[in-house]
Length: 265
Image (cartoon, rainbow, N blue to C red):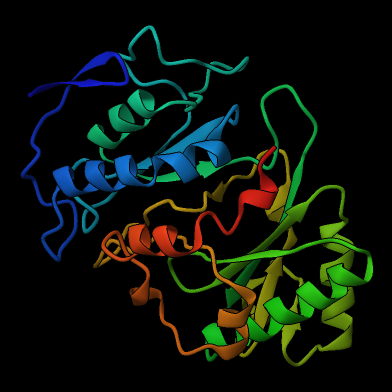
């Protein structure tokens, strides 16, 4: 099927193919990314984009892809390292058609120093969203002491992320939290130390790391989305990852706009 998107002609294929075990199709994935493009694209702009592709659906094995795939259209921009840059809707739709369900970025724009810092809150065995919410709130208050605004979101899987504008020493703050609440928080990579604790993963800010973008889909049984939250929602709780999906997030955007707009400039 050939369609016009933003002045570009794209060939879309297998639109009725299920991409998730719940029956969500590729057409629905493309439609979702099209509907949220106005808020998603500013977060992707000029950032090298790592894709996680699932050509056989989210219940099959996927693969990370950093370099440009064969057959890349000439109009899709590349970074200085020859990686994909997604600045417009045609590129976003082209990637969705390639079953790039997950979109991950660095914390900086191509050729520039880091402009964001992310704290990735990963719940260890025996912990979950309630513990992540508590740590997120504490991070908000700690950053506020330095006059820094914090932006919470779900990871789309088990945990949460709190993002702020650079510069912030994420490793130092994670260590500070681990010392203050050693029974609840760890800043150590060793997975054997994580049961019963929330791991504040400061390493997501490293030059070789990427973090799932806000509004990105995640692979799993259903099409969950890494979704921005209000701090009122974080305080009150009562939500699960399954509440934020391809079907519900566009409505949240209509209600709230882009809750992470303060991270774009």
